Image 1: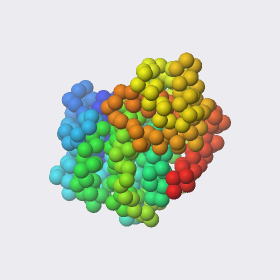
Image 2: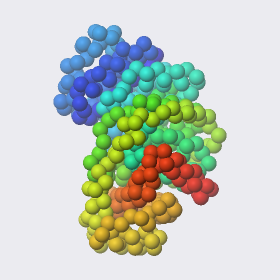
Image 3: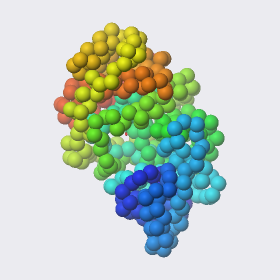
Length: 379
Ligand code: DGY
């Protein structure tokens, strides 16, 4: 049997309750565990709904608060690690699933597919799904790029959605994750990166299953919404430099079948507002850090203080920029954090205008080829 976990903060109550009910009604699930960040309105609403869900499904639903386990900002990582601990200490089920609580397209099929893949003997199952060509910009430009540069020969850069929060671990995998100090410490947005890394580092087999309907959830305004996530995901990658990674681990990916028109047509962020961020809030500290970067990047960024520019930040320039960031970036240094954000904005805008504008199929093929090229350049 399996445990299903929903980590949450402040969510649409009905979406959360519907998803918990769907999971509790699944014949493979014997416990749904809801892990709240704090005792607020969503927590109270779930608490009130539990008796009904339990009596209608016959499945136990547990509501807990996340513990302080890690050493970075207390965030999603503490929530997920609290659930892993709960699973080892309080449950004797074989498998644990995680799903984001805000998915409005969640159905029993997500659980079916993960269970079927685990029945095939995989230690870890990851769901992936179609995303808009302008969404997943941390995934492509930070995480997959970073894995391609740092570990080109392993399976790491080939994981479709390394930041995905929809996954299944077997008990064997959870035991390793809980015992790993780096994973425990990662209390922030970097947790997905660490789980993905640890999966490959310990040589666990991975299946990736495709959910064609996609994950329908909230989109962003300007990319400012993503700044904290960006910094934490990059710092997580940077912390993994130099760690050994086995090659040839079992990794199978279900072929993607169809992309809904809604996903193909979505523009995931506000381009106009984002362009203006390139010219905003420059400091002398940020300007002097630019001396570390290739001349075209340095000059383009300096010009952006007056008039936003980004055409120089093509695939090759981003590869070189990323290498400098890996060597020099310092988390918690406000100038470095602001500069990382602006460099990434320049990269995302360049890709949006040069590639995403040509249509979904071109854009996705381009991103895929970019990762392949980075793997070759890094070898
Ligand atoms: C990503 O890049 O995957 C983040 O979820 C932001 O879209």
